Length: 272
Image (cartoon, rainbow, N blue to C red):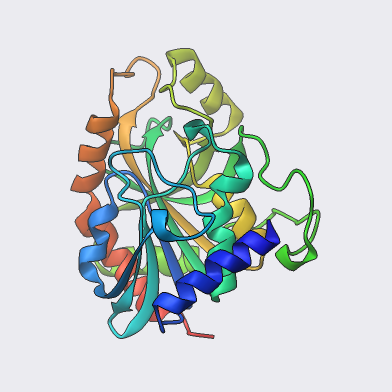
């Protein structure tokens, strides 16, 4: 695995001379955030040695290098999911590569279903904790280059970045929530009783991504911020039929406000 990561990193470095400190993973319906970037290089996943290929139509499958307000960034337009019949090592493979490319910060976005009655469709939720119901991505052979074998997860989501996101939202009069994200395998959307179970467990939103990436990034010392767009209600008595297309449409509606927050965060973090 380590050899493959270094091969992928070497290929990417041969295609760009940018060395971003910040990486962004763009979730369902949020890929158009790249329109805010002054793009220098686009690298297709299919061209990167050892990289998986995304099978989800709304995930373009490209790595975008460029600048945002003169800050170098790398954005993944499309991510990988456990339900795509990928082993967890493949799901987190791009995060390992981003670390070897030199990123210090990782901003992760997703679309999620709400299980908190105070949340509504279109809300933004900063993830401040998670409940992982997927296989742990760190299980298996360990490489010391990745970090500790048993990483502490008491602050997987960086408090400094959370405070910064809240401050930016307040200054720009953008309503934002905080909550716990429940990570499930998918690809089925949840039953009413599953939504109820996740609420009892302490969750505020539920989705099929993000947590494996955060676990891997946190192990490697990357500071993480994750923001969900609430795209469908999963509240008792209010559960509605929904589709992946519906979720994508709702996520895209929230992109302008989310973009304001992401751009200002990226411009605020030090290059280190």
